[in-house]
Length: 351
Image (cartoon, rainbow, N blue to C red; front, side, top):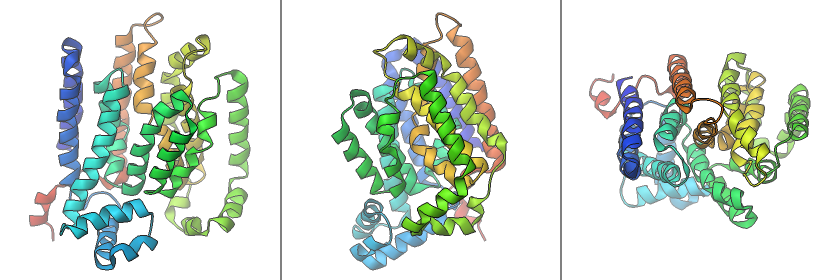
């Protein structure tokens, strides 16, 4: 656990330093990005899918570009490039985590009003842990982050380009297409009420709806026979509901100022609605990853909107405390199979 605590502590220390010297934001992100990249690349047999992706790499090494039929082409090409240049699975992990880290940390540097807080949330809200388990979907989600400026400017064609690129690594990224409209809808009681009632109706008829969908997308029907199709405890809803409550100042600002974009506030709201389905089928939580990732920007933005009503330091302290509690909860439950951390040096003592 020490490496994770070290990263979290460094993000907090960076927050203190950046308040005094804001010009060092890119230096902070470079140091934190390098630390995350090295730590994730040097892991050994952590992440539930570690061995599965190792086997996939070997298949692609042996099959070459004929392996494109195995899964999404972008991910196959990434494996093939490493194999073509004589690299192994370890080299593949270095390249994969480099791409993921650059996409996330440059995005934070470009758009976050508080890079240290965004990095802290990246670590504590389990996006870093996710990147060491759900490889294809993590990279797809990191690419989707870059759809954000096109959502803000309502530029549909570039938005489509980002989504299609992300879908080259995980087909589920295509779910973001309707969110081009939903995330840009003005916030109102009517909007949220209709969305909540629609989600409630889908929740009640969840199984028949998915049985119908699986007739057209049969490749995912196997999930209904696994443990991921089981429902999870309602305690897992505390995190999305908590994030929504933290964004209330941002929602208020967006309602009061028609020129303010509703994208971030709406992303947290729709993430909450999607994650309610975890109590029906655990696997459905993965559909929320693409909107949920925007939380690492939405929550710092919400903190900025508390100045007139509350002391931002109190709001920030509460957010930091809740993030720490959620991290400890996730670690105790073994989220993504990455707790505790094991590095390549563990190979020498592994049976």
